[in-house]
Amino acid sequence: MKSLKQLTLKIKDMLIKFINLLKPALSELKIMINQTNSIKKKIFMNIVAIILLVVIMIGTVSAFLCYKVTFDTLEGTMDKIAVMSSAVVTQKLEIYKTIAADLGLMSQLSSSMVTQQAKNEIYRERILMHNLSDIYTINNKGASLSNSTGRINLVGDTDYFQASMKGETYITNPQISTQTGQLVVIASAPLWKNGEFGSTIEGVVVVEVDGKVLSDISSSVKLDGKSFSYIIDKEGYTIGHPDYDKVINRENKILSSETDKKNKHIAELEKKTLEGQSVFGKYKFNG
Image (cartoon, rainbow, N blue to C red; front, top):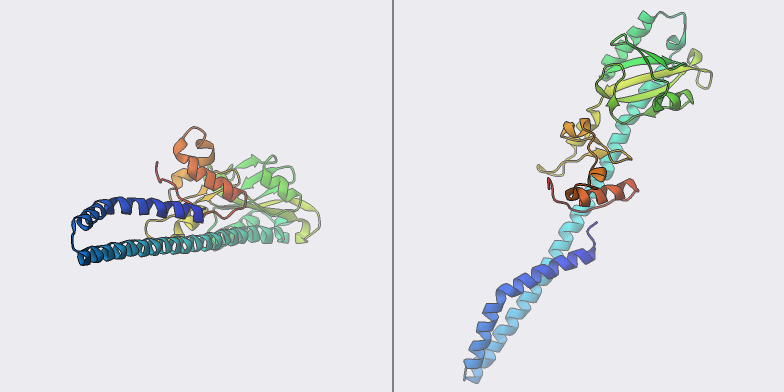
């Protein structure tokens, strides 16, 4: 975060540079005053020197105020954008959790009287309706059958399966799908018996979303033409970025800063955000 102390040091540095530039002119003015014999001229030259010093002081104060106002405004603007962007991401993910929860309350999906073909038709309708990658169910033993690939996979050890078998609606970070091999975000929910909430959990409903969904959101958040935003998870891994390769390659500046010192400053900022702080700072982009 840019503190008042840091701003003061910045202005002090600017003032020193400004005074160093004026030193030759001030020295020459002093020589002229000393070489002037006329009292009127000396008085005039002293007045000129005083006016010059006053102008310097006013200019310095004005520069400080402008600098501070600019950074205060920028900090406030970026803080609001970050909060709003976070809300947008949360809202978007909640939509997918709601889709999964609604499917879990569909009695047809837990009924043994409904054919798999009929269930697959329900999945296909929802996939087209919400632009999803895949929908499938997992039985209470952890075995899943993909609607799009027809593959059977055992996913009983996954966080999302275990959470939803306990009655939770869950969403993951981008990860490789066991069904398609593509990077996806998974939303899961309990599959309730006869579609009755609070009854027996027959299995888990899984909704897979293209893993680029978070990157698309971050790409849409910009302060100006040169700015960009990105999203990290609680461990510091990049899960949404305009450069999608950073997501695929699981970029983590916090971990990489231990060996790559150029990431040290941005890593410190990221650590503070993961602690729940709203921070404002600067770092050297790309080294």
